[in-house]
Amino acid sequence: MNTNRLSAKVEKALSDQMNKEIHASHIFLSYGIWADDKGYQGIANFLYRHSQEERNHSIKFMEYILNRGGKPKVNAIPAPPADPESLTACFEGVFKHEVDNTTAIYKIVDLSMAEKDWATWNFMQWFVQEQIEEETLAQNLIDKLKIAGGDRATDESLFTLDKTLQEAPNDVPLAQEATGNNP
Image 1 (tube, rainbow, N blue to C red):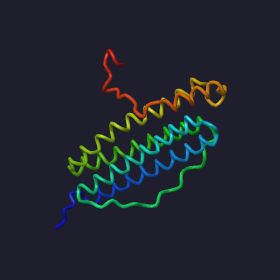
Image 2: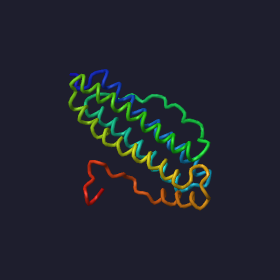
Image 3: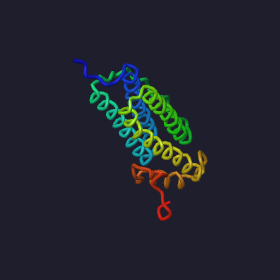
Image 4: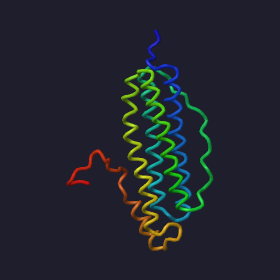
């Protein structure tokens, strides 16, 4: 008896996203190694934590596919991009990746809606929320670096930024949770 409750198209899209999340984990790991090598241990630690978060997202997709009776397919993961030339390029790379990932998430949401696969549509809403956080986090990195002086920041500003990111929590508040007392 076939117990797969996913269409072949949805199963492939979810597997592709699982692999995309693994690739993201490798990208952030490589950026973290680059930052660590440059002496930015706080930024590196931040990127290492983000790498682990992306891997966890991959596992969420894997578990969902299995729970729906499908079989996730692990593909070859492309090599991460070359080392960034600067912190600006690094943070812009993080932002670009998150925006690309949001686009991929939305395509799965659209597909699940078109196929009236409400279980997958519901599952994907967690990722829609997560991408709001991820894009906000990436934009905040760019903003913090700009405030510090961008690629012409002083050593003191970069030291402070590095320390701030090392101590930063792993989560970003959602706009939907904002209130007058907690903007």
